[in-house]
Amino acid sequence: MNSRVHELLGYSRQDLLDTRVLDLVEPDDHEKAEYFFEQAGRSHAHIRSVELALKPREMARTRRYFEVAVWPTAASDDTGETLIYGTARDITDRKESEAFINFQAYHDLLTRLPNRALFRDRVDVAIAQAQRHSHPLAVMFIDLNRFKVINDSLGHTIGDRLLQAVAQRLLGCIRKGDTLSRFGGDEFTLLLPEISDKNAAVEVAEKILQSLSTPFHLGGDHELYVGASIGIAIYPEGGDTLEALIRHADIAMYREKNTGKNGIRLFAPEMHGNTPHRLQLEQDLRKALEREEFHILYQPQVDGETGQLLGVEALIRWDHPDRGVLGPAEFIPVAEDTRLIVDLDRATLRNALCDIRDAHRRVKDLRLAVNLSPVLIERDDFVDGVLGLLVETGFPPELLEIEITESLLMSDTHDTVAKLNRLCEAGVQVAVDDFGTGYSSLSYLQKLPVHTLKIDRSFTHTICTEGEACIVNAIVSMARGLQMNIIAEGVETSSQQNYLRRLGCPMMQGFLFGHPSPLADLLQQESDFGRHTVRS
Image 1 (tube, rainbow, N blue to C red):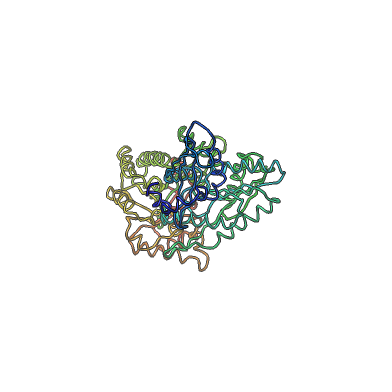
Image 2: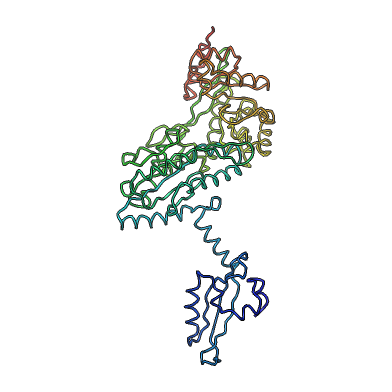
């Protein structure tokens, strides 16, 4: 007996000599050990081995695993029983590695929740039990609302901590036998394997929404709010197979998410075919890029004082072969999640540069604004790609304006700043789209190379309502103080235009001046833009 066993288990040599081997075995391995040693005492020609957990002397020590190997000898004791010889080899490191690998295979390491593979296994088992005992079960799809804004604005570290905190809250809403899984990204799935009826599932979903309504405090000054859209499929009416239940819960969730609010939706058969399934949309999107099914519409940006056409914003549309023309809100989130947005944005920018370059023959110095995804901007080759396209198309850099989101502005990484500075040095302008809807502060605007602020349409729509114009007034005043250009989006009435003109807003964009349209149609109307100027 060597000294290593004392280091591992804490027993002295004499302690071990005075103790039966079975008394050292952990209780959960005791039955296995008894059977093993009983068999080991019988006559056999081969070495036998078993893996056992042995108890340390002090409870504070870590449980250790050993491979115990025994074989009989020719000797016997006073009673005539054959003596056996054995060794115990420490295999704790291997067992822990195996356990970790197994955990990795079936769990999400960030939240420690089951992953989709384990979730699917448990749903399969639950369906078999439900069939046997004729009771319903429920599968839920839970998609967090506002998580992407928080993750993009405050960074992935805060985003990861928020997901962990959400997971803990969700676990507090379910029973011990239920299975909560992180399905991917900000999506969770929940299995309720045995419920009385659909109302029981709805009650759990309501409990989840209630738990998420309390703000999350993750350190610092941030008070974070997230909500959720929850879809529920009930076995058997909502599906009688694994795939059907998950797919139908997903469809119900997206139907609820399209309302723009937190809420719960039970799957109903009439939802089939009415809600685009995310997977199908992703597959269609990949084909659309290959088939070039996208086209660009342009919306005019005009001089606030004279109504003269100064620039256009490029707006992407998808000519879906089955669903008709789709706006960006219907496919950009999927494109960003799958990183297909990189190819889509590059193609859009190239085509728009070519279109407006050719339009310069008719409207000299017409500016082009293009909104690019943070997914593309975060790539190492982003700046080289933009500058390369400018050279390839022969487009003047000073007439290009790249629109970025407020969330990207808030990320304020040195890498982002360096990229925007390189573009500015080449003459490209930078605008912040939908300004005022996020978390921007004056300090960020002062530090970053931003030339233009675009007032979000939600603010423009309220400026003629008493007491509601203060935000627009403040943004225009701030932009003037920072010597930035400003564009008011969503101008739809002469009253809105007049108010903005008196405020000194230099540029405007909205349905009053033109809906998004093909460039050829817009250029034909160019001489009409000044007519929209109203004096009062």
